[in-house]
Length: 228
Image (cartoon, rainbow, N blue to C red; front, top):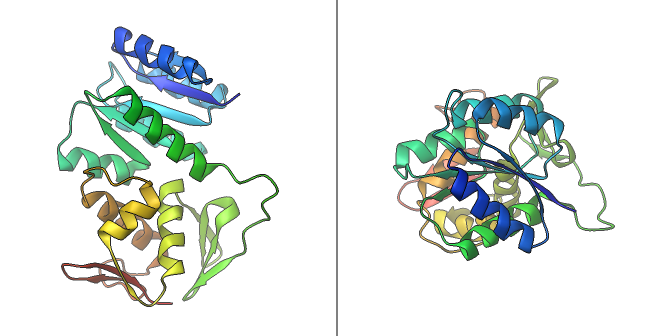
């Protein structure tokens, strides 16, 4: 059974999320503080984490950073009443895979969860993904990592999905909307800054000088182009 960790200090909301997820067949673990949430993330082996940002004590950002020090693969869905662009960008840069602004509907929550789990779980019988080469770096999809100068640099699942989408369209221009549809799996009114934040993460891993990229190029007012 797929286990989901819900880190949410609003107890009524946490109870409602748990009830709806259990109806869908998920095993749900709930934590109400950042400290407890980080401890549960490291011990209960969740396949997905739903994380509020405004937590008592340790903030959601700090919990996310702590999770990413030991687990770069588990999908993290942020839950927050703070829908400003700066909050979303900070969340993605810290390692989040998706962002759901409160209040949200049950069906939208379920769809987001299903999309994240689908992208993080290999299909039965799927073979090991081959190493990808981008310039002088190697990308190991199985380990969610970029290897540069012999050093393994972890990637979040969403950043890896984005890189795969760009590799499929190598050397041609790809719009932000096209990337949103393929990588995030829905066409809701998600800001294109979502793509930009993950591109920034990829540049920090792929490029020697992220400020002057040689491979992941911006096409002004359109999108991006991956030059192999």
